[in-house]
Amino acid sequence: MARITAGIATSHVPAIGAAIDLGKTKDLYWAPVFQGYEFVKEWIKDNTPDVVILVYNDHASSLMLDIVPTFALGFAEEFQSADEGWGRRPVPVVKNHLDLAAHIAEQLVIDEFDITLINEMDVDHGCTVPLSLVFGQPEEWPCKVIPLAVNVTQFPTPSGERCWKLGEAIRNAVKTFPEDLDVQVWGTGGMSHQLQGTRAGLINEEFDRRFIDLLAHEPEELKYITRLEYLRETGTEGIELIMWLIMRASLGYGVEEKKRFYRVPASNTAVGHVVYEAKS
Ligand code: DHB
Ligand code: FE
Image (cartoon, rainbow, N blue to C red; front, side):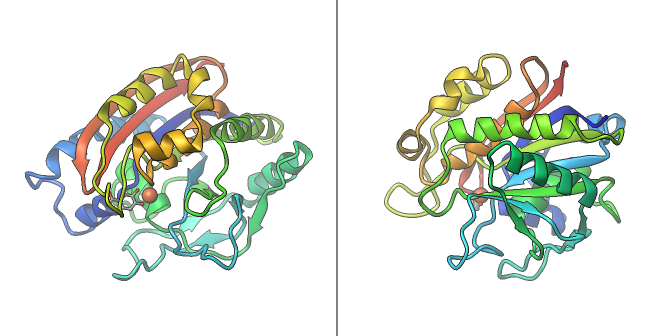
């Protein structure tokens, strides 16, 4: 049987990808950010999964205004890194695990999540920056990746509660896949940040630290943070944190927190990162 063994959450700031690609990780500005990822880069060597279900959001790179799926599962054989205006990132192609993706799609629909299937798309920094932060710069990504895109850019965005339930449904779907697979779920984005408007540059460290404090062992109240609260407290882009809830819910009740990291700033964002191992 397949099982979800661990979860990772991390911000997916595009400038972090550029810093890696341009060899700037040891620069004064970037070194303290990358320091926070030393643990996971070692940990993953002993905990490389067969498949990562990578929960992220597309930033109008592949999913524009013409189609706005709330939850979309990547269903192509592979996904190129998107050209976000300065060329494709020089990273390996992301390869899917189609049998598991098909099983998850079917189980989610049975579980009343009418998931959109995307047969062709490129993946942007939301997907590739977390892969680079965890795996570094390999020739090939060392595992299969099922991208799961969540709409956090166009109203109406899903609620935290709905995301929590999706995480639970993913957990149930993975558990019933007959092949013996080690699966991780990653949640990306956040923490507080606002990229435009009069509050551009907003960071709410108190909110972010509390979110990390509660996520491992007392995530209940985080489910009920409303979209308006995310907007007010964490800026227009802070709602990316709902993707961390999908990751957390997919791990079940008990987790062991192996790492937490928080750093302000990286680009315009408060960078947060956690590593959890599932207990059951
Ligand atoms: C930044 C952060 C994001 O999450 C994103 O999608 C784009 C930009 C930033 O901090 O610059
Ligand atoms: Fe983002």
